[in-house]
Every structure is written in structure tokens, then in C-alpha cells.
Image 1 (tube, rainbow, N blue to C red):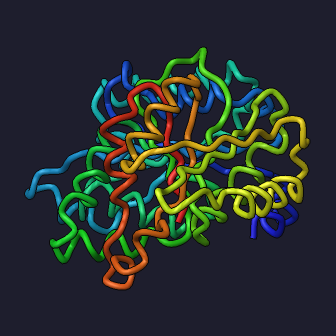
Image 2: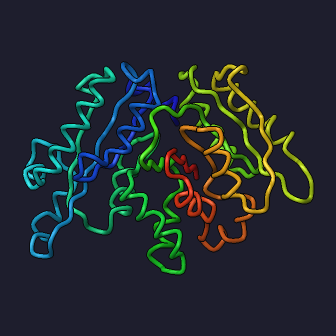
Length: 303
């Protein structure tokens, strides 16, 4: 799908980045600008701002959800929101992304932040959805309240596009921790990481597996994941293997992220231990715990 879209559009990457109305909290934009070095010619960024709307205004905007910044919806934004959008554009332009590759979409909140973000994601061909702090809190709530029917329905729709959860990162951090448990979802994470980072030679990728008490079965997992990365053109010199130990998988991953000062950790939404939960539409426990534990690195959640 990525290769097909690249041929059709001439663009390699297209990221959807959510923005709040706080110019100090542009964590998704700041992550992209600090993590990537080769964004100039082959990257498009769509910035999405969803603003709260009172009930009296809801009917007036119901038919105008996805509008260009020059349209009426943009005029509804607060001064703070416009300032955040302007600052985000400046950060991207400083990375030499052409102005014509930067898009802005503004809409009123209708079904909740995450649901509205997913609606936009399904309309566009995005390689990743990048969430800042506020949106990531909404995602965390969904995973923590999976008994709720609405939460279950939204989680089930997280089925096609990777989500990058970006707290207040440290720009000096580098490299990717690719967490693998042998599940199909974790190998899809390897596929996503390989595709995105193939053209980022300065970013090393560490394949990380948390061994269970039953023994270490990491070798076939590492070999398969490495073959995926090599297929995408990642140089073998950039790939490392590392085995962790412990019963609490989220804690082991979190400790390694902090110890190695990784810029990001990638993992599958549906792990091996969650197959029975996935059948019921419930999953994401490790992701939920990592959102709470990791404060200075991004989490790439791959369905």
C-alpha cells in the first residue's frame, strides 16, 4: 500500500499530526522535527486541530467538519489555536519541508477527540497518526475502560494505521527500540519501522525481546524481524539484538527505553499474550502501561 501511494502521489511519507491550542505542547510536531533528518522533499504533513464546540453551535458546524484553513471553520479557532498552528508550520519549514507539503485541517469536536481523529485518518492515506499529550490521554482512557461499548468500538477501528504517541520528548535522544514477542502485530511493527527508517541512516534499530521463564525463544523472532528490516533497505550495521528478562513486560520495556535513551519504542497493539482478549475486541494493556511509564520518548503503536 505504501509503495502504491508513493507511485501515485510522488510522496513517500504522509503524517497526520494532531495539535492542541497550546503552543508549548506541540509534542507531535517537535518529535517529527527532532527525530527525522531527511524530510525535505518526500514528506507531507497534515496538521489536525479539533476544537471544542458548545451545543448551540453543533448544528451549525455538523455539515462542515473537514475544511481548509481558508474556509469558515478556520475562523472559529481561538487566537491560541492559530498561534499553535503558525508555530507548527514554522518548525516544519525550518526542517526544509516545502510549504506546499504542509496542510492544515480544523474541525469541531463531534464524537470525541480519538473518534474524530480516526474519522480523518480513514479519509486520508496516512503512514502514521501522531498524537500529542492530550490526545494520548484520551487513547489511554479507551484502553483502560474497555468494558465500555464505545471504547470497544473505537479500539476495534485501530486496525490499519500506526499511532505515534508523543509526550514531551528529549530532542537529544536517538534510535529505535523495536519490541518483539513473535506475534503478527509485532512483525507488522517491524514492517512499519523498516519502511519509515530505511532512509534515516543515523537512527539505529535495536530488536528487543522480553524472555519468559519458560526459556529464550528470541532467535527465530529476531531473524524474521531482521529480514523484514533488510527487505526495506535498512543496513545490517544499524540493527542490534537485545534480550530482556522479567515478568512485567511493560516495566522491562520502559526501563530499557530509559536506560538506552531511545527516542522511540515500537510494538504491536495485539501481543501474543492478548490473543484471547483480541477475540473479544479488548487489547492494548502493554500500550496503556507504557503510556504511563514512558515520559521522554515516543511510542509507536502498530496494529
